[in-house]
Image (cartoon, rainbow over the protein chains, first blue to last red):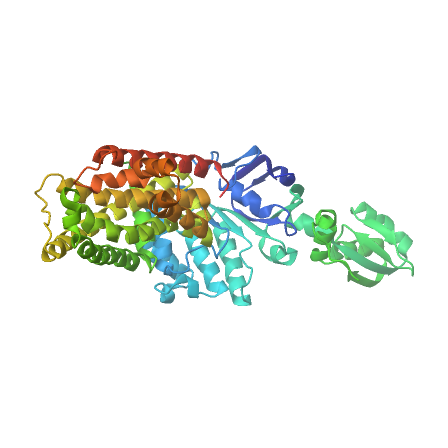
Length: 299
Length: 258
């Protein structure tokens, strides 16, 4: 479990992380979502003690990370797959990390096998493709069989097969009751992997929410029905909100299509159209619109 | 040494030997010290008559080669730290060893030992080959049993270790390979070797006597020159300078964001 309390980091007069408080629970994949520059990587660096916060604290499994006796058994992290010496072989890279924590060379071969790099173990890491580099970074994170895993944008630059592999890996790690925090700036990616979302923008917490609730809140559905005046109260009763369209249709927010269908059945109303309007991506963009640092303007 | 620091030292040794260029560069550096030392010893011994009692066969056999070798030793020390900053590896290293003092201490220990061992090999190699060359040129060669000779040769290995550690400290402070290497060359070569010729006499004398590496190299002499520090005093001054530089590096390394 990771507990973050009032975490603040300033670089000069820019506040990168602003009084952030949240908890990452074990046994599920927590997506750490925010636009570029929102403070995700800075937060992860502070969790690992690489950057010192100006205020606030982080505890991992109840204590600070820096004083841990065997850090790799506590936390495994993939921050930047390119952060290695390109002249070293994959195996030597992992070996020098493993040795710091007294992890035997046998485990190095195990994780190389696990990530599918056993055939290139003695090749220089600098010759690796982006995808192989990500696999090597993940192998490093898994070396100590840690209880907490941090992945910063792990699917960047991966091919579809690699993305699928990482998704399944994260799900299985969470299934073993580990704490898994995965950052991304892409909602679509998180929708397929995460059970829970921490959304930040400009260093501030925007949402700390289950993926199901996020989907429900984020969905807009266009509805046409014979007998709208009978349907509307039922929808409001079910927790939806209604916006009247121009041409006899209306937009329902906060209910999924199935719930609208059930409301129509209960009201004895025929639905003539039921169209989900807004993607999760759109919902996420609406949520973070005010906190995006750099907008592209349309000339 | 506790088990955990031993683990970090083992890791640093793996890091050092697994960068393909490091070991060959070290071996070439030893060869350059021995080879260049023999050449300069051959040249210098031709004029031994003029030098008379000041002729220091031990010093002459090592000093010429050392001038070249020390640049390489200092640069390797710099790279022990800056190569991690250049590649981003430092963040991975500090994730698996979050105690920063421990990581830097392991680097200092590992490279210090490497530089010391290779320095002793180079010192004895250049001394032994140098004495053969000096003898062949008709000048009086030194022997390890002569007064002060063993101290001078062993001391040259210690100088290697200190030059390497000055490199580690500067690499840690400056984090950039070019910047740190430039400073190492300035501190150990340009200021003490070329500097005194360009400076006012009083300043030049002061540099020749008290500049860390100039003072330290007194340990490699067997003939004491008037006005210079005694051998161990000089080495002590250089060691103290290195220690202060390392302490500053530790303080900065612990407080800075990685």
